[in-house]
Amino acid sequence: MYRYFVHPPAWLRAFYPKRIWRGDTSAPTIYLTFDDGPHPEITPFVLEQLAAYHAKASFFCIGNRVERYPSIFQMIVAQGHSVGNHTMHHLNGWRTGTSLYLQNVAKASELINSNLFRPPYGKMNIAQARGIASAMQKPHSKIVMWDILSADFDTRLTGEDCFAICKKHLRPGSIIVMHDSEKAWPRLSYLLPHLLAYASKEGFTFAPLSVN
Image (cartoon, rainbow, N blue to C red; front, side, top):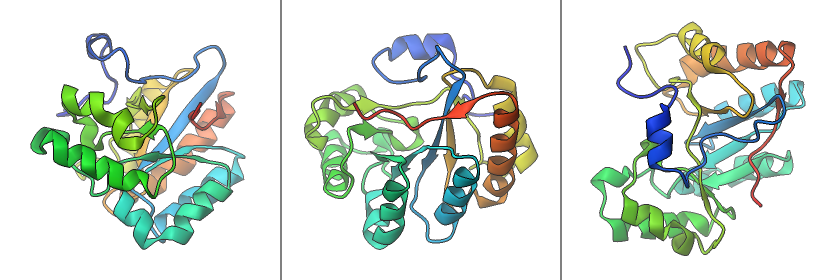
């Protein structure tokens, strides 16, 4: 059904052992993450939903969107969420030369002070991965992947489909990818409130990814 992994298999995680696939598994904690923002309407909706459950999350932001909507970015930070670098222009590492890719990461890091990085589309080559710490000027940088890809970007799916994906794979330590973007909005608007309600009822708490 899917042309991508909604739940990365063990062999893929083992192939990239230095990347972060799950958070702390010792407690019933999950890690909600949002890519591709900030967005002037959708990001405030996300923040409002999170606040209703006293939930903290992580936002992997695109540099040029931070540049365009600095007040929304500051709202994320002010509300106690963590932020991460998602490149300046949402580059696909498999289609971009290493030098240009790392320059783009470095440009975004001027606006996003974080040691967390997530490659757009989850795609980057080995040389790009090795250069992330230097590009971000963060020696303890972390490349964050995911345990659950909600697929809210997939226009073939409904919000109910995306919620079912998350329910099926949810477990302690799950890092869940959603998108505060216009493309994902028809599904995110259903998924996020239902996921927050369900996970809370199941006894999970919501934490931001650590930047330490």
